[in-house]
Length: 145
Image 1 (cartoon, rainbow, N blue to C red):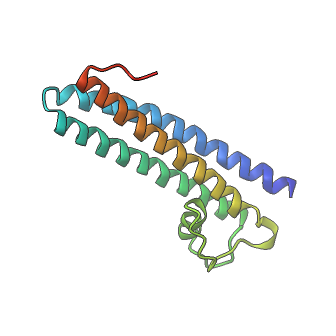
Image 2 (cartoon, helix red, strand yellow):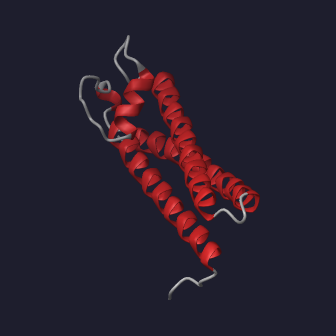
């Protein structure tokens, strides 16, 4: 059990690092879009939100691939399983249950789900902050305390 927790925590830490780097990248990207669409608030807001959401979705896809690679290295899924599908189902907490980890790695699924929930919450916070900052910049109003 301790090994499962250690491995799951390590894969989660890798994904947290990935998400951190992608968050920094998305902030840089949206600043560029905001500067390039000055004077067109509707287009600016749409462009910023679409770019932010797409970049964050790419981050999640990469993190799911990291989980699928971990499952492959560990042999955590039954032979012949679609590891990317298995990782998606766990990371998104969909939980179909049609593919379950082998007994020796039974905690990896819930750990991937915990990691996914955290990363989706983080992405939601980033989306909200980008939206709020863009609207503030457009209206010139400071953020309420």
